Amino acid sequence: MNTNFSRLIGILALAAQAQSARAELKWEQTSVDLRPGFNDKQAVAHFNYENVGNTPVHFKSVHASCGCTTAQTQNEQVAPGQKGEITATFNIGGRTGTQVKTVTVQTDDPERSSIVLTLKAVITPLLEFQPTLVYWQNGEEPKPKIITAKANKDAAIKKLDVSSSTPDFTAKVDPGSAPNEFRISVQPRDTTKAVYATLTIKPDSPANTGNMFSAAARVMPPTPATKSTLSTIRHDLATPAATAASPSQ
Image (tube, rainbow, N blue to C red; front, side, top):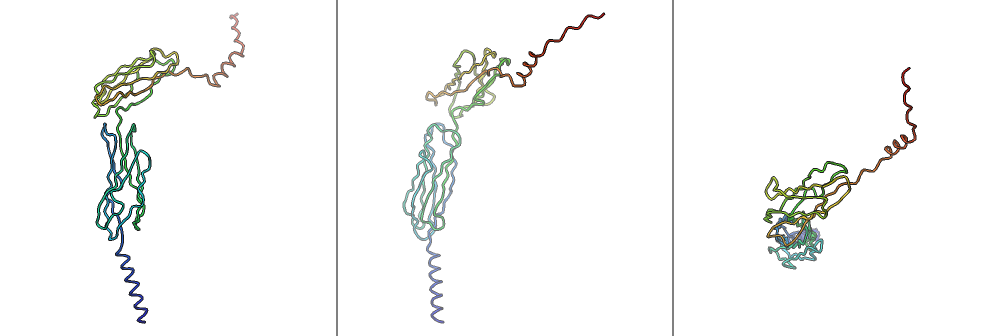
């Protein structure tokens, strides 16, 4: 009886010791939203952690989701009570829009051995266009159509220069209805023939390094005759003309 009791006490002691001897990384945040400035080349996220357990935590691997992102940790081992961070650096390059990059972290933390850190960067381009193509149906009245250009507020764009790749279209630029907005009015000279043109748009901005943008204008070709239209034409050609009515007696 005493032997069994002693064994039970030993098991409980070992269980208590195992429970008290634990490693655990607590993350301040696992997702970071960034809005890089217009001239920024990189977006950098900091993921802070702390070992709230009482045994060391070891990093096994820190792996970014793509080649445009790098990640590194300050320490290979995190002692109890120690704080640190993993830094994720996203190289922006020519990318625009919402970019989501992840970093997968593997540790020997028994509670959470794998964690995914997320970096989201919203990158506003120098110019945004709506729409990027204006077109006219064949034979449509050649009235101007509008492309709205919205400029990045940090770019200080004062004007846009627009040119057409063919003389079949003309384009002029006026201020838009909102700040940092321009209205590009595009007009075809003739809509009786199919034609396509590229509109080259160059912003006048101290922040621009010679970048040019493109939109398009098009006059559509004539609509092909449908099968029903062809059948009607063939029927009319095959049907003899009606005989003129005889004059009244």
